[in-house]
Length: 305
Ligand SMILES: Nc1ncnc2c1ncn2[C@@H]1O[C@H](COP(=O)(O)OP(=O)(O)O)[C@@H](O)[C@H]1O
Ligand SMILES: [Mg+2]
Image 1 (cartoon, rainbow, N blue to C red):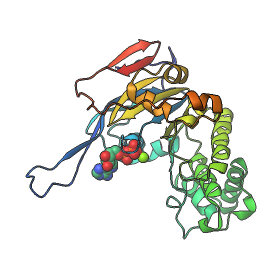
Image 2: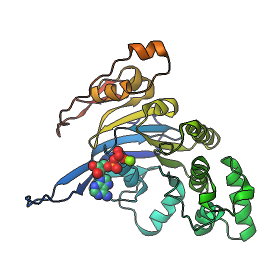
Image 3: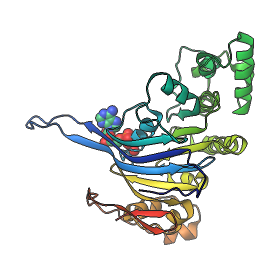
Image 4: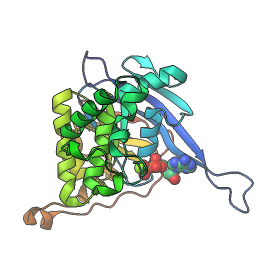
């Protein structure tokens, strides 16, 4: 069990022993369907105002963790506790109420916006559905305010998604996530699909919003460089399991798991001297033993042993 790093402050989110298995395709000669352990005994906490960076190569289970927390998918085992309340099996109105407090920003700003709806309607849909703003003019004012907050021109709220660039679309996605003033945003690779030149703008926007509102992020990424810049703590996932977890400084300066070191060694380093001395550390190819347990190696720094 991973303890809270916050001391006595209650965690906003606590995930305990989360498991999600998917049934893969059965092979032609196999009588048994192959079971993919997408998420296998994952535990972590996120404090208020904190960013947890969740990193790992493609297919390691990061998005599945995000979907489970958002309750867009059901866990096979484990517990999700949000602000002291067990939300693992929440249904109906309870789940609708949770949506106000827990929002998601998706990776693909093209696929995640309905092309047939005006962007103002997309951003205002949550406010309308939750009855926060019922009058048409009040709704328009609020959406215009959200547009300004994310750096979009409120004069454009009657336009359609295809009229915006990738970065602007991601701002629309962020405005939609912000509209109900959530306490936690799951940002699933929010900049991966964007031009490098605008990635930093979106990251800075997310950081500014956190400063203003004290919201928490689960920031999912495979690019460790960005994660280092914005996270308070980091969890490294591999094959469905967390192999390293701790304060950002400890994980980056004193990575203990070979897989974390391999990920770090793949970070592009702009300084030519450091680039020259950088060594690629090969990741180990061994299976993660199913009885392996996280072991504390420093203050709040855990490694799968
Ligand atoms: N709906 C699904 N059905 C079957 N397998 C899935 C499904 N979603 C994810 N998986 C599998 O679970 C594993 C983890 O996927 P995912 O969480 O998307 O990883 P990541 O986000 O780290 O790239 C992968 O092997 C993927 O193929
Ligand atoms: Mg993913």
